[in-house]
Image 1 (cartoon, rainbow, N blue to C red):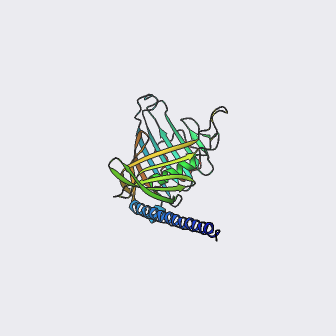
Image 2 (tube, rainbow, N blue to C red):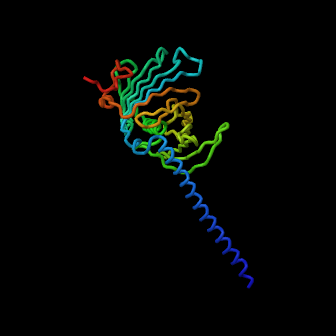
Image 3 (spheres, rainbow, N blue to C red):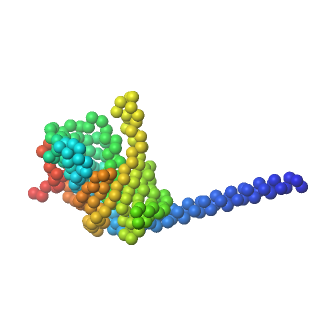
Length: 276
């Protein structure tokens, strides 16, 4: 008879653990359902999944005036023109003039990491694979469009965050293994802040130096405008520098810009298809 009490206690403990586990699983499922509902609201606010999935290419021009006063003769600001043909075509013109950094043009395949670049002279092939380019292509897609046919974040969970006097919906996602957190305006359901981090796979510059480790990126988005039925941010802030952005969706581009070395005479508009 004395053995019954420990036995009953063990059975009761196991029952409680099983019940707690079931409740925990139910809670996780409910959290994910809530997160997915918030995500669907955001997708609808952007313009709807059908329009987002129809994005085959895009161009983004960003004009940035650096807030730092140091080295303004080197680069007081930057104008960047990026053209992407999904899933992996990349063309980029960076212009720091009149700063001493000048300008550069880059054409590459984001999947292979191979391409060419020029800084005013004859274009040459990359000395090594640009392994971070695929990440940059993904970043532009979820920062400006939330999702596309090529990039669709996997929704994990949601909660709320308060900044100043406002509360925002916070949705955690995974994109190709990277954690990406979206903060959504509770009225418009549009992203106002995106935070992501990833561990660099690049080797250290020298054997005696530590590897780069984890990199963290924070984007603040505002001044939304409508382009081809899709709401995109007209201003994107990274760190202390804010960029005014102009987005074109499915523009007419010259497909050769992705597969041939860029000309040293290239301009910000070289990527456009010639209308002859």
